[in-house]
Length: 253
Image (cartoon, rainbow, N blue to C red; front, side):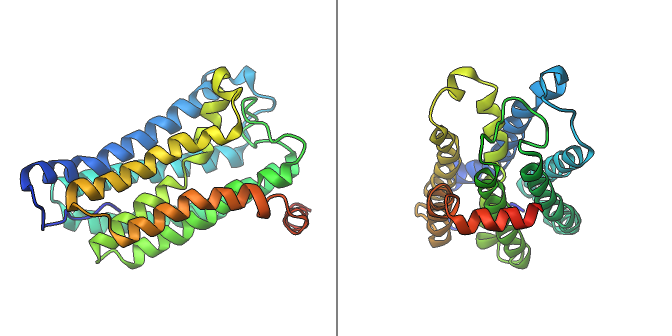
């Protein structure tokens, strides 16, 4: 996950401090979003349209464990305990091996059920659950690709840290959708409102490059553009196509 700081900095003191706390701050922000998004349904289960399934509970626990690991790994790097960070990286492989099938299975079950598997009233999939599945499945595919690539490039810090950061940004649309659903004035706005906090995460990643290295790394450009345009294709030509609907109906049969 987040790895050793960049060494060629134009303002060493301020840049090192920014680097030290940036990934910790991002991890804390992602954990906070997840807690705020899902706690209402946990503390007030009567507001669910159906009980929380064991599958959805397992999915939530494993995904939350991944974010906690991101926080721990970020702190290990910030305190220069790189050896422990690398050894603990083995745990990320085990969690990832659970996350991928759980994410896929939970999404397919949602399509069969016709609404979010948590039973949360705040997150409806409307009259077209096949269309709604495009978002979690696409997020899962991109997350998996970036997370595996991050593991492959764990000895290349500049690549590794960016891959893992953007992989985790791909996990944010689901909790953000719940958070928006629990906030009436936000829920009343067009669905595209979810791109505001997503853009904030991406902007933070770009800003980190500018603050620490005084330039935007080419990989940051690629990942930022991918994150910003992927949703357009998911919501438009992919999610609305008959081919996608046939594919989801095949998965859910």
